[in-house]
Amino acid sequence: MEWLKPNEATNQFEDNTDSFSDFKIREFIPNSNVPKKYSILTQFFLLLGCQDENSVTSLFVDNRIDNQVIEEIIMHFDNTKIVLENELPSEIMLSKPNQESLSLIRSNHLNPIIKDLYGTISKKQYEWKPQKSYKIISEFIEKYEDMEFDKVLDCLKNTSKGPLLSLSLYNWTLEDYLKDTFVIRYFTHKCKNVYLWIDDSNIVTTIQLELH
Image (cartoon, rainbow, N blue to C red; front, top):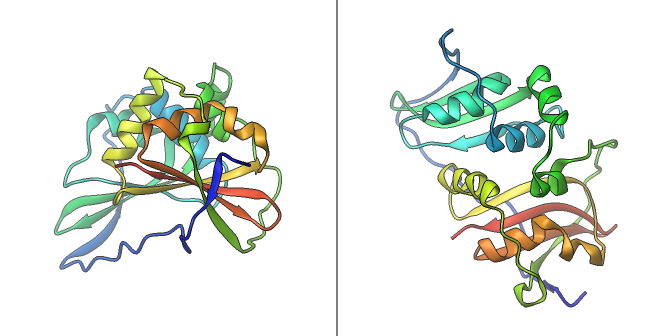
């Protein structure tokens, strides 16, 4: 496949270990008057979070949590914990997507990029196998713009730890048609670099974004 080039990376995870002078984890309990709002952010994070029932989605914040994040993301999860560093929030850990919110999201139109990523429910448990990284060659990919999804990308940039972001995939097999999907066409031209992690059974396990 001419649009993929083997990459020398050996691990899709960054070492983000920090030393905290005062480190605590607390459950997030919203005020009773906080509204639950639906948006493209709700759609993305709910469907990401429901792919694996044991998964935890982390959002990294700088000392404060925006109301938009609370109303459009946190309020749609039944389990949210906040990591505090020196009594100030540094990370949000989301798990257990709310089933009512999920039902409403699934009954409405899905953004085409989110549909490519997480529009189908994973049916099988993945068994880990050795993986290799491949860089997507942008010259072979047709550009796709999506102003709605730009809001998700902005959120990911603002809540990621470092320039690399890895999104787990659950239903992708390496085929040539992938280069024509909305998600590949969008990310390839919006990010500095995009990589696919592929195991020896041609299962695509991760899309890794070099955001800046």
